[in-house]
Length: 249
Image (cartoon, rainbow, N blue to C red; front, side):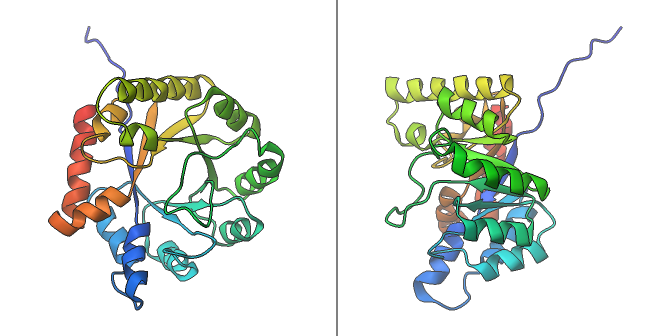
């Protein structure tokens, strides 16, 4: 009798197109178009598109979100701050997913994870309204037990682990420690019944150890791919990232 083995689900790749819009906005006008980038990403094998509509609209704009919703045949993940304005926008457009992230005006990019534990009472009604609208809710958090427990308490079905500290650490004991922390958090997420994603700062040299964590179901990668596109093209950069992810599994 042939033995049947349980296969690991294919790790999904979400491509963040924020910094295509950053380049466009540096000069003004319409080029390069983040919607065109999203369609190229889909053609290259992306399983979803991530776009962060910041309160100051420094890269993605409201019009970009509307056009992405109309153009995409793959899921759109809207990254958003936990504010009434962003909640209204998410409920109006109803993207496939909404990832709640921390946001500070002075930061260049998202710095660290959301304090889901400290902001429980503020976040609870937002999570509930997004879920009631049929939007998959995720919380972008640090790999900490307290934050994972808070996400489970809030009823968020998905968490996204902040991988920036691991990706920025030099090769050596500290990076190994941070990778172990991600592994432990991903395993805890699964025990709590949460789907685990990961993202921030991931590049060709750091993706494989993260992609090899069996409890992680999706990686969201953006800035590195947009930067690499300058040298090899956007589709080629995404295809290479997809190859490395598949090799790790």
